[in-house]
Image 1: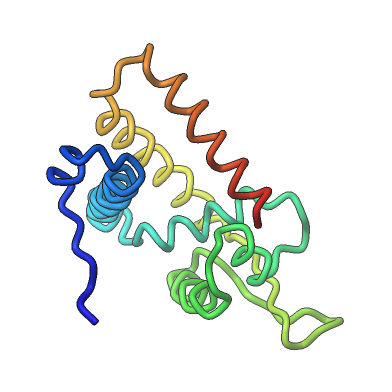
Image 2: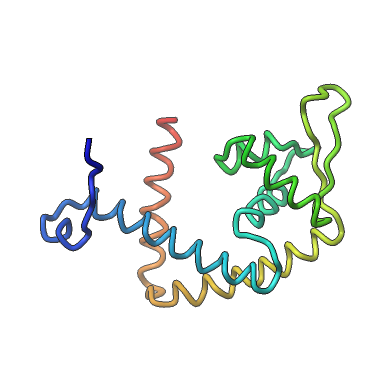
Length: 159
């Protein structure tokens, strides 16, 4: 079976909103992620995915923080989180211990170095995102956020 190739220009002319919009979101996410990845690797020597693991840790309201909790929060597999956590542990940004109640469960903690890297990486991300999205007028931003939140809510309810 031949894969379906989506040409956004053709789709836009066909007025197929769903397909052209999904393709645009995918393409924009990929390109923004690639841009952020480059900025983080250049200045902090961490990947965007590794930064997201730090975000997952930072945003967790539950303690202790387990790899499975981060995987759930970031919609990633536990294997993916485990791989990134291993790298972050080797960089000295996280520490990992076995849970005393469940030896298969790993508890992670952020180190002092990890906190510093996270905070400075977050400033880089904020600066880059502000630059990238500066092309969207302030007056349009509220509508975009409102509409995206509506779609997200519908998806989370369907889950």
